[in-house]
Image: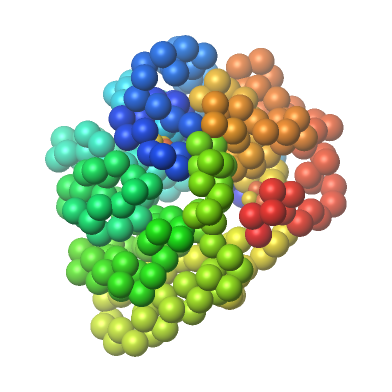
Length: 310
Ligand code: SF4
Ligand code: SF4
């Protein structure tokens, strides 16, 4: 078996939500799509990615921005599934435009859909716009109906990392039979760089992992959601400070730039440091990019997280 390469493809910068903490600087303004490839180029980029299967197994998670601000993206996802297999395709969406028709169409080409909810629906939350969590809640039953594995991702920040909010979220996740609950700590990248005070301390991070683990252990139900802490969070068995850049994952930005880490992005969706920029998919083959000298920096020795996230 070949070593798997997990690719997060941020297919667009456009997003209706304009979240204050957006990790990649997405915006509802159509002008942000100015440097995005055309549909035909996006399809070619998928062909380009698929060539990597000669060297590595490949999984693509489509993200954004919000994927479904442009419904052409369904064709891009379908094309990726036709080349890589449905089981290797995931999407991250806010739930925007996900209804019965779209969920049915996606079920043929997407195995997993992850949506972000930092609070239960209808809870006011300063870091997200009104209605944000409700969009995911509305989409969830459609995705479940058509057999797509569902995930809710919660970004833990100072503003939601307390007993009441975590217990409410856990109750919501269980009662709505979400398959996976993934916990990620807020990392101040993109527009989120202006919210340093929302970053958890190591002690808060450890507390959150312990609190959620204990809450889940107390739940004796046989139908529990799977809980998954991000590898950069301390206090659980999957924690590691060893960097995954290129060895395990890469990111592709809306303009085709390939980044070693999708968190190494500024508020204008630019790569923060040249050492993270591996190349561009519109100009180069991904097979060359992941074996080029920029990639070798990440492949040839083990690194601790160079962003200080882990
Ligand atoms: S954080 Fe996600 S939902 Fe919010 S603006 Fe950015 S891409 Fe859109
Ligand atoms: S730089 Fe840090 S956050 Fe990025 S892949 Fe490496 S360990 Fe993960």
